[in-house]
Image: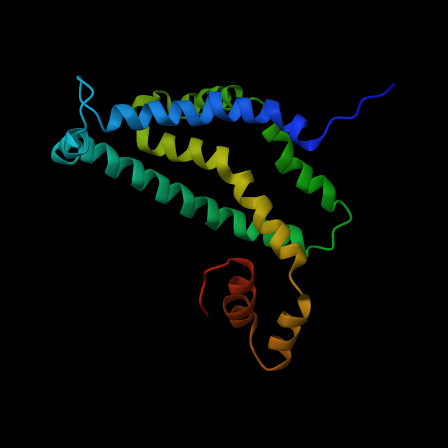
Length: 189
């Protein structure tokens, strides 16, 4: 006799995994963040963080790295996604596959290969740590920026752009006032 499991029964391994590897570690992190060595509640860790010049410098460096990487990924990914979504090429899926295949390779292997390429080009990676960090993060996160933009641009109704062009908008205005606000949520035209 074949036994079928209910959804609740099938969800038990996921719940156990979630509790063991997400909720418990987060609870331990919160406990250590808000207690001192004796277990008493304190906010001294946070005050010490914002008083230290070193930690604030590290925070600023991290935020700047994230902003620059995000902007660079957006500047590269949007035109690539737009070209992929609007192209009439027969090899359209082959081009998309070129962006998917590197994601199948292990992250550590990709970063090691990129490090070897950069050290072959530059000689010593220690001379340009910020540049190398930006290149590595952009290389790693670029596919994750291209594919969401590609799927949105692929589903974008071409009638809006055609209507804007029929009403006299040049291609730049069509892009800035119609395509960009429809494809990137939160942009106000």
